[in-house]
Every structure is written in C-alpha cells, then in structure tokens.
Length: 190
Image 1 (cartoon, rainbow, N blue to C red):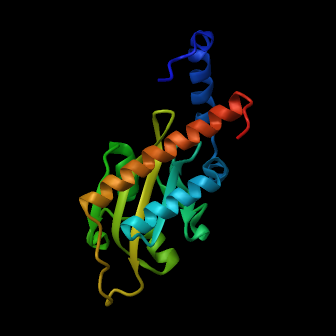
Image 2 (cartoon, rainbow, N blue to C red):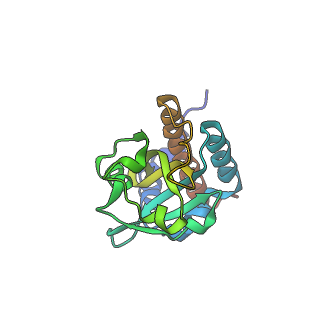
C-alpha cells in the first residue's frame, strides 16, 4: 500500500492551491492539449460504448457569460461554438450541477436549437453531465445522437446505464487533466 510521503505532507496544501489556481485559469482553447492523446482515445471508447454521434465539453468562458465548446469528437468544427450561459439544457445542467439524460430532446422547449441550426442536424437524444476541474464545476460534458431530417426515425436513444457511463467519463477526464497539470506544476515529465 502506498501512503503519503511525510516529506511532501507540509507542501500538500501549497501544491493543491497551485493546482486549483492553474486550472481556474485554463482557457477553453487550451483544453484539447490538456486532454492529450490518451484522453482523446478514452473519449472515443466511451462515445462508442453509448452509441453517441458526438461528444463535447463545454467550458464557461472567462467572462462567465457563455459556454464554449472546447473539445468535440468526432467533429472538431464545433470547437469554439458558443451558447449564452442562460440558455438551453446544457446551461441548466451547469447551473444545477445535475446530470440529464433525455430522448426526443428536440421536443423539449428548453433545448437550445442554435447548434442544431448551425450544423443542419437535429439533436434527438442527449446526455449532459457537469464537468469539474479541481473539484469545481467549470462546464458540461455532453453526448448526443442526431438525425438529418425531422421526418427520419429517431435513433435508439440513451438509457440510465449510458448516463452512468458518461458520468464516469467526466470524472475520469477530471482526474486525467488534474494529473497532467500536477505533473506540469511539479516539473515532471508529462
């Protein structure tokens, strides 16, 4: 069993404070680099396991007025896409810090249609969970199932099992990013 090293115990508060301060200053455009190759592979595995057409991380901008897509698979064209912080289900998940799993989401009046209209697709099913860095909610991790036309059949949809899996993905990504930032702060090879 590995136990805390007494030589570092006096410094643990300082290291933790530095981690929080560094992660609070992460700009949305820096997220992809923090996720790294291993993180991207984890995203794809989880996305495939729930049958998602796309998976994204939305981060609150520094001015705290909007959410910005800061990571997106498999379509990086969404990176940089913005949504007002007071609009849509994604914002509701961030404000409440409660996950959401909804099928036929396009019928929900609270669903923002901005992204659908821009991408010329219809969001049928969505899972959205709070995304944390250093224990603070900084955004939302979402995955979606899409269709091209209103007349087309809806995809199979998501279940509670899928929601649990995406919640674990959010926790896994927080830990991976925390680890990578700690390595950088301590000058260890990343």
